Image (cartoon, rainbow, N blue to C red; front, side, top):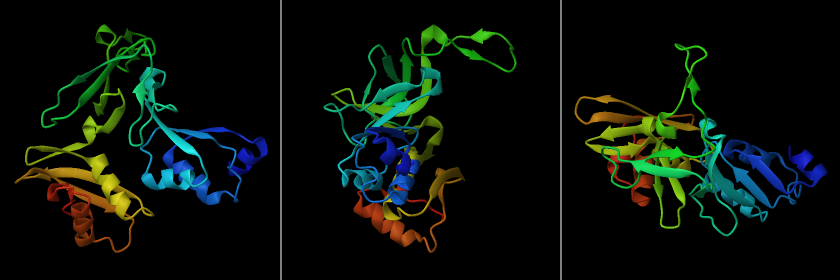
Length: 232
């Protein structure tokens, strides 16, 4: 891909964080120098990835979508952007945030607009189009929307754990771990716990990963002890 970019003198690249990291490592010096903007989606863009591309003068514009929404919902654009957000919702999209028990800021994003699908065809009703209720599509994502209308994704509703009555985003914990050990792969899962309701487990390919280092890093980031996986 970097060679094709160099040959075509491409100025815009659409990709995901994982592939962007791979391109940056594989590229010959200057091979991607013509890229002005990267539009990234499908997964959260890591700070390390932004740093890789900013050194070359390339700006990463993070966006967000869903298959049911044709598929783009939001995207940062030059002049109205903020790292760590996915930008503002596209024109014509109406949204509401439904409250989620245990989450005090933000809510579950539900959208309606001309880009939303006509409906699902379900396995138990072949050939029957089941429309979204009143045209609203439940994204299943927990988000915050700031005063500028920029959307921050806190995680999938299914990827929150309830620990001692507090909702904890598994994606946020993964991001915290990735900041400590950026060259390894990490997944955080939740399992039932008789005392706190649920507990977190970190699955990682980091050799020698230890909880003490993780605790110190979380403390330095201002994250509560509750967010540190109990088991690695």
